[in-house]
Image 1 (tube, rainbow, N blue to C red):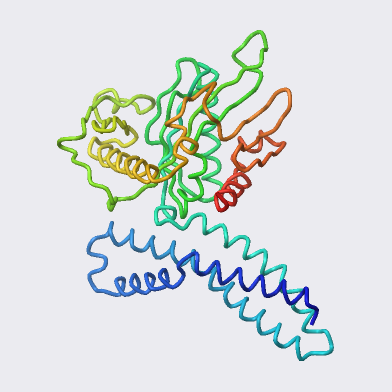
Image 2 (cartoon, rainbow, N blue to C red):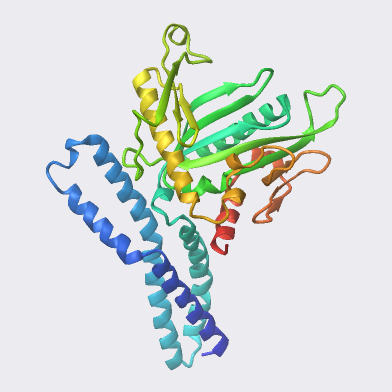
Length: 368
């Protein structure tokens, strides 16, 4: 067997073992066994909400483990073929190895992206806040373009995107909005979108046809459900304001004060929800959002690159750090400032074709 082919095959098998170890495969496998044991209990569905959360955890765990399990089997097959090639003088075993390796490498590349989404919260849903920055009406319009981009991306992936809160701009667009994006690994996929985004184009609101630069900030936090690992004293530390919902909604929004705004006094974090028809539902959703934001802040205090990752902590305009530039005139391109990925199809990206940038960020984050 050729030495170079043997070394390449052995390196591939080693990568599979490293992937298994980095993902705590055995620990996750034990957790799956625990969940399956819980689900077999006769009273499992007595608490429907908790049961659905457990089922979702099992589904996410299996989707995580299945490709790794397949790769481990492929790695065993490859090792067996390498041993066979040492005794095969016909060269057929070597040819089979050459045929196996590209497919294994492709699967391995895809599975390695999971290591960038290994945190427990990565597997769940996400809250996304979009806020217009400097640029007036132009930035408000850009914020609405980003909201549309993320909603289209979510729908194309089969996710659900719900607008929990929206404040419209004075002339066009939005000043801010909060989305709830539901789907497997929604937070893991979207967490790299956190930061300042910049748009350069000839403004449709400028009668002189001049080029404008506008900014908007995106902040993504995990939906931790009802089991958020953080304690909040809602009686002492949180101020609750009730107000009337705005926007479409007919007579209901004109007669009831159902929208909820929560302010966490120690940190001055503010969240609000007005999408649901009842005050109780809006309060429950707002509390989840607040817990998610505080948890994310707690996690990011442990990281050295907080300022680089969180647009909410940076100036949303000139002088602030941007993570992605969307240029429509005079050139046409989108460039991510972290992964350095650049594509010449800005309108496709703004239509929701984000997967290439999401994958590039995940790969970039693995080497940071």
